[in-house]
Image (cartoon, rainbow, N blue to C red; front, side, top):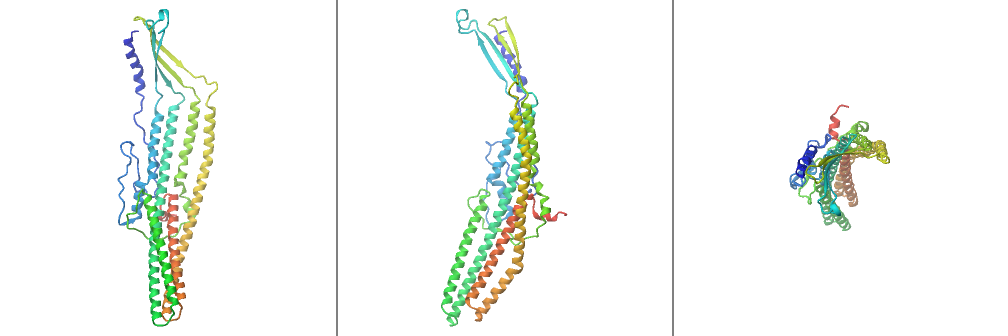
Length: 459
């Protein structure tokens, strides 16, 4: 066979193989979003990392009054951890693409009887061969490999959904802390006003000769103490604002204040009713896919135990224009020692392990729901009692003592005690309301929907 005839032969061997190339990855099958925050757009990584480093619009720091809905939208679009989880989905798509590709063929060229001695000196007596080999996977390995990669992609989707709920929960809790911080500052400012007014009343009574200078010192101490408390509340509010903007990758808090109703609370449904929604949590819902993945990995390991074929074909040239030959070969590994016994046993163990991990995940989520429920119920009862009984009584007592002090019925220590009691009751009320809304955010993240939507559903 003449050398010039080799090129079409090789081309003929390569054409059917090139046609097997997969051009693009298949998109990952993403789970349906949980009802919580479903209407808000979230970050989605672009198809090509080189085209853009971000699929979200440029961050515009919020100004003026910030609502919870705006804060949630900013966090879902710009949270760095959620963006990283979205890129993991793109990586899973790439792994699915790689799993779908067939093994590459091998082209081997060989020359014999060259650079020898005697008649084989130089290349005059050379014999050349050109062989193309292709590994043929048996046992459905490629299909099983694709299924494993596809299921891993689905789990990446569940991880994204879990991270999305985490971002919603963390943002809501941070927002509540800012809202409560604003209330604490307002309460502190009110206490400073009361202390200043008390100081003025004491000055008037001293001028009238009704009390001694000692009470002026007490009034001054109370004013300084209330100013210190106010400064601390302002520092805590500033720290809370920074924690909130960090959730959408912001550097500084440019908004003026947040808007919301901290005292908007509602009765808590029964724990048994809420437990019925736990199946929506990604850490629980994902286990159906996880079990399928473990089984798919076992099927793949069983398929890997089956030997593959290597088919080869080519041409041989004998340095004679009139002589040439085709080469055909088949290679089969002999599974005498390695039959993938360890891989199969490991996959079986991982499948059995998955059942226990599933139970552990369900137990952990149930425990988290129980803790959040108890905090929510306790905070609701405390906030209700403080608002209904304690705060009105403290306000009434404070007003009565102040009026009695003007009339000389009470001493200044009585005024200070009533004033501190009112302030502490207000602080406890704010703390209870903040704990209620933070526990509410935690609980809603666990059941995947708002408590308001649960209350609207028929029992």
